[in-house]
Image 1 (cartoon, rainbow, N blue to C red):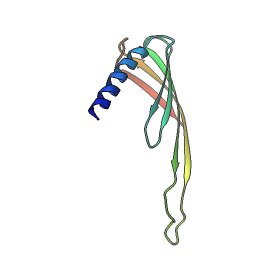
Image 2 (cartoon, rainbow, N blue to C red; image 1 turned 135 degrees about the vertical axis):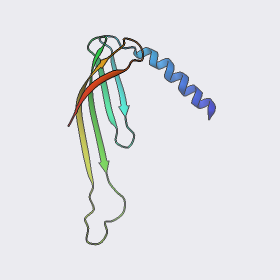
Image 3 (cartoon, rainbow, N blue to C red; image 1 turned 135 degrees about the horizontal axis):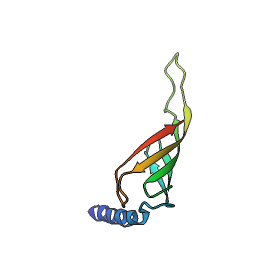
Image 4 (cartoon, helix red, strand yellow; image 1 turned 180 degrees about the horizontal axis):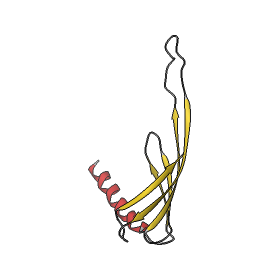
Length: 102
C-alpha cells in the first residue's frame, strides 16, 4: 500500500508540472465525491482565469417511507461560472475569486 501511495504522489507531482499557469492554458477537474462538480478552467491571461462549473446530485434514499409520510427522491443540477485572479505567476499560486452558481 505504501508503494502505491508513493507512486500516486510521484505521478501527481509530475503531472502538475504540465499544467503551469500561462495564457491560453486549459484544464479539467472534478471537485467533490458524493455530489461532484466538473470543472473546466481557462487562463485568459497569466494571472486571470475563468472556470465553468457543471454539477449534479442524486438523492435516492433506500427503503420505504414510514407510514403516513411520502418518500422523496430527486436530482439537482448545478451550473456556474467564476473568475480567479492569481497573485503569482508560477506552478502553484494563491488566488482570490468570485463564483456564481445556479
